Length: 275
Length: 175
Image 1 (cartoon, rainbow over the protein chains, first blue to last red):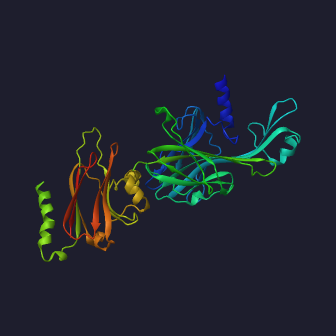
Image 2 (cartoon, rainbow over the protein chains, first blue to last red):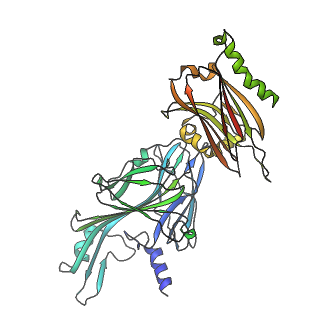
Image 3 (cartoon, rainbow over the protein chains, first blue to last red):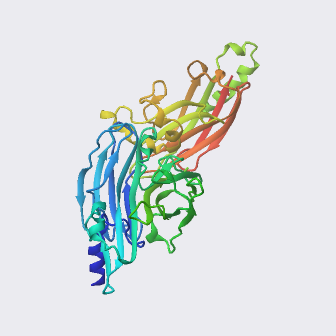
């Protein structure tokens, strides 16, 4: 029963809540990140799971997945399908350069305890908060009120031909990653540097965790953990080739009213190639 | 193998000639693609290049792939010549004139690269590496490198040996 409930909740909430439970990890992973030839195709899987890149829990819904092309313009997700445990789609890379595939959302969330001692929340599950409704939806004298402005972003990158950097331009909304080292030019034994921004400014002391795929075939998580410096920068040394999942989280109290807390979640899939 | 022997002697002979400078500088690569005991054999994609300390200083010498497939389908696998793709291939406009050739099957192959086409003598003096990278469909990949110093002033033979996708590789400098 517990499992069924959590499965249902996760499936329906994965996109509407700023965060999913820490235990469940959302990812969009390409079958290849470095491509040659004209107009190559790439296929992607998207899911929410415990073991990275093993689709064993819930599909990641594609309705908010978008693509940024190297020279701009619309790129359609093709052959979309959402199954029991994963979604899949294809992209044709008709422009040469680097593409960003992402899903980003943000919103207000309020939690408090009502007069009867019951936990209350706004917006209701599955709904998007409208700041104009805040005053009427949340009681003025709400007990233990916490209001957070949360952002959530899931990304991956693929490159046809020579890597380009146009798609790295930040939107300056929420927690975002700006690569210093190109994410489609990662090699085992080398070190990559990235920068995290929160609403366009350096995200200082954000927590970063990196996990190698293939978790089912080892007995420990072997996570790599680091923290961003005062410029929002962090570095990762890739121990070996493979597909990696990066997760970053950020929290501060520099929120716009009515929020009192600002949070950000960023995850991305990166491929590291052998030398 | 007789042929190889003579080729090895040739640069030495040239050095002894007073008019050696008239002879154009040539790099010769003698290489072996090993016989594979596999059910499904595809001739490997191979790239050869000369790379300076400054990684942008790069001279492509040879690129063997299925360049005559319809719709350039053979280009789809060029990324698998992974280091070459990273160092050079991905920024080239394909097909590349003068270096592109068909794949070759197992056996010994000899190639010559002359100064007229590849302009070795106009490269800045310094330490370079000759790279040869081979990758085979449903097979393995191997990268070998041989350090060389430019300018090429005397006849020299450099050797390297692969373990799986490449056999003996000899780089013969014929100034």
